[in-house]
Length: 203
Image (cartoon, rainbow, N blue to C red; front, side):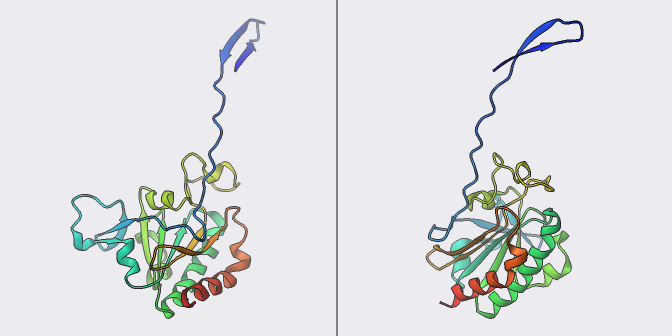
């Protein structure tokens, strides 16, 4: 597209502006999809991605390893969600207790290192993983650099994930998903979401 610009002296100049490429919207995984394979590494007592080639095998966990212990609940959380972050974290902590009581486990991927999480999060029966390269969030479709959240949700200026929770069975099938793409549901649905997840685990 060519624009003609007129300066204060009346001189006209032309400039070419490239058309903005259409945004390819992020496509989160849904119930019935297969959970993607992922690996996490334990570094200095904290779980993180990516797994470096030099990481000892005994410091690596993969999705199949996690599923050997039973049903897995996968969550995505960002402390920089503004006012939404604290209620979501509180829900994760409540959910962790319920999931643990039913013999399953909760793994939460975050864009912040676990060492900076509040004590209540670190003490909850859940595994917090620093998704440093956002690779797992991208695989689940809850993050895309080409479709940033801050471009459509006011009050968010960071590269963040879509709030999400998934229940994954032993066959890697997603049996339940909670997605809050508009950042408005969980504050009103925390208990129903917890109940839906625990019901999926035991059914």
